[in-house]
Amino acid sequence: MASRMARIVHMGKLDGYSALLNGTMLELEGRLLWPAEEPLKEAMRRAGLQPSELIIDTCSPVAGMPVSAVSAAAVRHRSGGLPLAA
Image 1: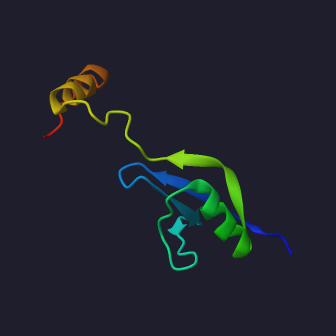
Image 2: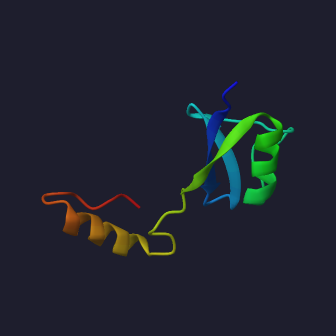
């Protein structure tokens, strides 16, 4: 029997790891969010899932930037665009 492959996602704002299968967040061993990648991979294997080697990181590249800087960058890259709302 072929094992199903699930994605691992690092939830940037929550600083934890989660598993996704077909776009659905999985609850493994009673947890949706795991503190580290390795314990999540172990739980996935125990559930018969193949963990993906690639980790999706949801951490925003603009985290920590002031709103004015983000708005200015958005206007600069979008011709005719309006500033983002605060």
